Length: 250
Image (cartoon, rainbow, N blue to C red; front, side, top):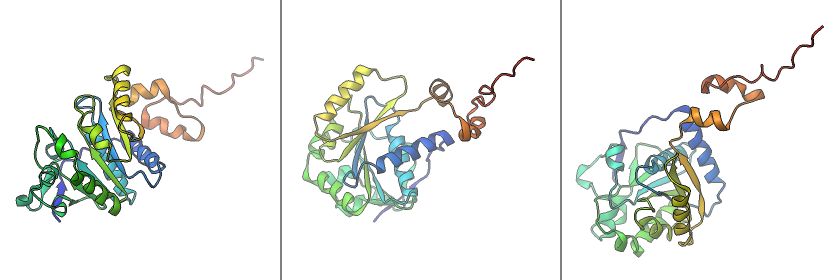
C-alpha cells in the first residue's frame, strides 16, 4: 500500500473547527447504513474539497476509520492545494488509472499521515469521465472501502456544472451539498436539489460554507446564562447587564 503525506492542510479557526465537529456529530446520527457520502456543490470554488478533507480529518480524530475518494476526474485541485506527497513517487497512480484498468485496487488506496484516514487520489485528469464512473469497478471500489471502513467521503465536481456527481450518487448512501455563503441563489440550489433527488440517493443536508462568523452570529445568535463566557472569544457583548432590573427610584 502506498502512503500519502498531507503537507498543506490549512489551519482552521476555533469557530470553523467547532462547526466541523458539529457536522461530524450530526453525520454520525444518520445511521449505520449511511457510509458512502457524496460531497458536491452548485458552482466551482465553493470549498467542497476543503470541507470533505476537514470532515475526513475530524472523523479520524473521533476514532472512525475513514477514506477520502477524489472523484473530480475533470479538474481536481486536491493534490496541489493540500500538498499531497507520495512516499514512493513512482507509484503515482489513482482513481483514473484504476477505472481505466491500468492498475489494481490495492495500488490506489493510500494510507496517510492522519491516523485512521486513507485516500484514493485522482491520478490524472480525464476529459470525459462518465464512462469510467458508470462502471462496476467504481462501485466495487466504494463497496470495498465501505466494508472495511466506517465512512467513505467522495469529493465530486459541482453538480450545477457537470453531471458527474449525480452519476456517483447512484452508488452512494447520502449527499452533502456545500453552499458558499451569499453567492448561490435559491433557484440554483433548488435545481441542484432536484437533480440529485432523481438519483435516488438521500440528501443528508446542506453545509453553509465560508460564513463571515462575526456578521452572521451578530444577526442570528447570542449566548446567555452559563454560556456567556464564550462572548469574550467571539467579541459579542455580554447580555447579563442588560437583563438586570432597573433600580426603583426612592
